[in-house]
Length: 65
Image (cartoon, rainbow, N blue to C red; front, side, top):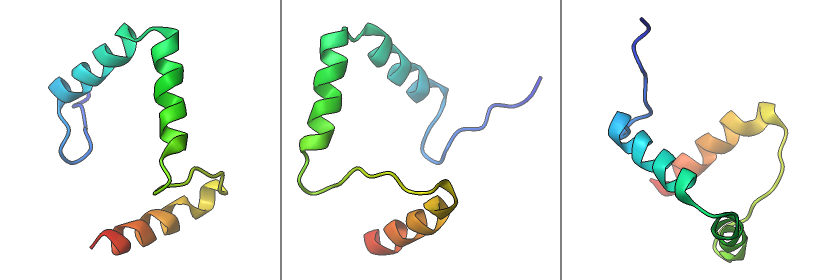
């Protein structure tokens, strides 16, 4: 059996908790959560070419340091 790999700071318990949250959401709650994400004026959601994602992640990491 293949060992499970989780991102830094994550474990199986955290993943299960997140899955439970989304499985328990009503459709209305899910829509409200999605809409709230777009209302955050400190962040922006945009489409970018997939091959630029690593460079963008690197820029974000540098900005956060």
